[in-house]
Image (tube, rainbow, N blue to C red; front, side, top):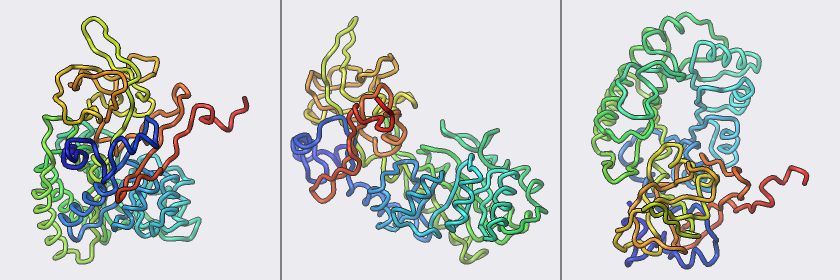
Length: 418
């Protein structure tokens, strides 16, 4: 993806704009995104899964400009908080194209979602479905509910959300006993929601998951006693962060989705089929850019100290993985020197690239950490050490646009008296 999207004529370039032009107007550190890459990924996904609605997971990257562009491409909205509901409505998503999911919804958030008329709320427990119904009854407004199920599927990914005890959803083996016979006044069970795992690269698992969930939905509709109007298959489509990871085989998953769709259409015509997708749409479209402010040599090891660190981009430290790293000013040069990249934060945890291979690293180099379009800015602890906030930039059609302004240290806490 790096060479395909970000290298032109031996130099770093993003949607027609070169590194020098970007740096002339925008000091590091910053995030920069390719609008073209996001659109291409959405197009490939929609073409692979005709008849499925793609709900963009705001948590992956909630920047309103990116969300607005995905809306224009045809995406719906998958949200997990009142703030994300408000953002989706602000961007222009229709309430009927917003699904509210997540394990910790408050009564106030549920009330707001029902008042706004979201498409459905995923219920994670017997208590929560009761709370949803009581709020809907108080408001005298009907609401569709999807039963989130913790299935018995075998774990295959580090961030697995089914298959064992967990905080997500009804356990598959007990959901019928918990839900069947409930007297609901305004809430109506219309389907199920199963999010198996995050960052899945196993195409065969995803293909099997689709068939498993469709059969489960049919069975539960009969055993619990509800009209099946929607199946939310979750998502979890992964992207390769490391060189030994293999890209997801979308075609294999697409073939399984086609079979599942045909089967459901025969038995439940008109049933809405949903994928929740975040990382897969935006991760590879983003780069975190920071500058080497000095080099450090310690006991045989090379360290590059950069102006942006774990405060700006927490994910590599939190997940304990290396994202792909390149020196953008030497992007095609041979990478022959092992070096660790550390930011300005006063902790040894602040290593955003550990023992990575770089081409002759030196002070002034421009570091690009790739696959930063998802869980980058939004997952980071940007207030730590009061260093200010990085900008977010979007490149579209040869033009760079600031979609979130940088904030310097002196305005990080504008609401606090000095």
